[in-house]
Amino acid sequence: MKILYDHQIFSNQSYGGPSRYYVKLAEKIYELEQNPEIISGFHINEHLNDIKYKRIVAGKKIPFSKFLNKSSKSKYILRKINQNFFLRQSENKSPDVIHYTYFDNINVKIKCKKIVTVYDLIHEIFYNEYKRNQFYRPKKEIIQKADNVICISNSTKNDLIKYYDVDEKKLQVIYLGNDIKKVTLKFPKYDKYLNLPFILYVGKRHGYKNFDNLLKTFSENISKLKDIYIVCFGGGEFNKQEIKKAKDLKLDLNKLIFVDGNDELLSLFYQNARLFVYPSKYEGFGLPILEAFINECPVICSNTSSLPEVGGDAVSYFDPYNTGSIFESMYKTIFDDSFRKELILKGKKQNKLFSWEKTALNHINLYKC
Image (cartoon, rainbow, N blue to C red):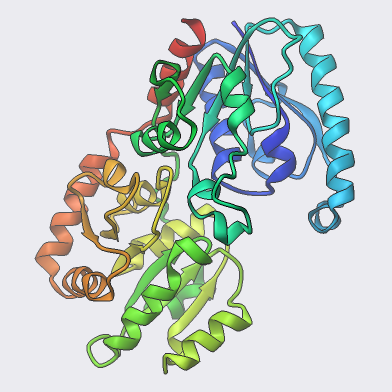
C-alpha cells in the first residue's frame, strides 16, 4: 500500500507535536512493511533530520528558515512551490492513500483515499486570542472533502462535531504514541538547577496555556511555597510581559528558571522535578503527560478537554480557572511522599496504554478500509 503524507506541516513548523507525529507514524508504518513517503518539499522542519529511514522523505530543508518565519510573502511563495511539487509527485506515484498534514484544500483530481488529522480546535474555541471571530472555521472545506477524519482524542472528536456538525461516521479516534525515553545521561552544567526543589512546566506559556494562573497560584501561597522553584523548559525565554507579571505578583524572579534543550535534557528535568504541572485550559491530546509518566515524574494537570483521557487515574487533577484548586494539587504532590509514589506507579501503568506501534496499526487499518 502506497501512502503519501503532504508538505504542509513541515513548511509550517520547525518543531512541534503535529510534525513529530507524522515522522514517528511514517517510521513505524515503514517498520510494519507498508510503503509510506513524506513529500515534504522545501521545508523548515527539524524532526525530519532525525528520521531513521531516509527514503521516506522527499524534499529539502531550506537554510533561511528564520527569514521565512518573518515574511508572509516568502511563506506564500514556498506554499505554492510545494503545492505544485506535491501534485506532480502524487500524480507520478499513484498512491492508495494521501494523508494531508494540515488544512489546505484537498486536490480532488487525484483518485485515492484522502485522510486528514485534526489535532485540536484551539483556533475555533479561543478565537479571540488569534484575532478571529466566533464563526472562524478554517477546517471546513478539507473536512467535507476528506474520506475520513482522524481525531487524536475523543475530546477533539466531540469538539469537531460541535463546531463543524460533521457526520460522526466519518470520524476515527486514534491516540498518539509516546517515544520519549528515560535517559541516564549527565549534563553537569545544569546540576545547579537539577539539585533545586522545583516543579516543571514544559512548552509554550501564552493565553490558553494558563501560565498566568500558575504564577498567581504561587503569588497567593508564597509562604507555603517559598523554597520551591519553577523551571520552564522550552517555549521561548521569558518576555517583558511575563517578567512584569511576575514582578506585579511580587514573585522572586530568581525562582523562575528558563531552560531549553533536547529530549535527553528534558528527560533529566522530568526525573528530578517534584512534579510536572500542566495548567492548560485546553489540549487536543497532552503528550507531555506521557513524557512525565515514562520519566517517573508525578503529574498534576487541568481536568479539562482531552487531559483526563490521557492521564486516567494517574494524575492529580485541578480546575485550571481556580488557583485554590491548583495549589491543593500542587502542595499535596510536592510534600506528601506516599502520594507522589502512588502517582508515579500509576503513571508507569497508564503509559503502557500508548505506543506508536498501536497508533500505526490503527492508521493502517483505517487506510485499508
